Image (cartoon, rainbow, N blue to C red):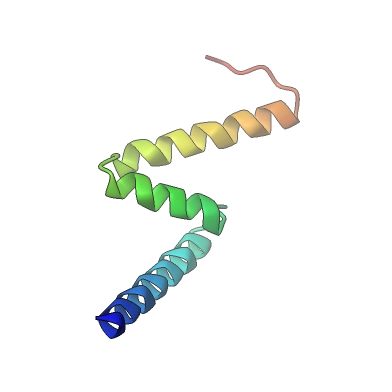
Length: 73
């Protein structure tokens, strides 16, 4: 049983590393912690397109705040 569990953990890590590499290739700007949260949200049924839109908006808000620009809502 422990051997099976170790294989599952190894496969999960490998899958995560591939997802992280894809994220980096696509220049998403997501760190490993944020990517982990996104994956968990998708596993819970959150629509990935909606999640991507929200992340883009949050990044925009951060950029606007850093540049002291008011948001156009």
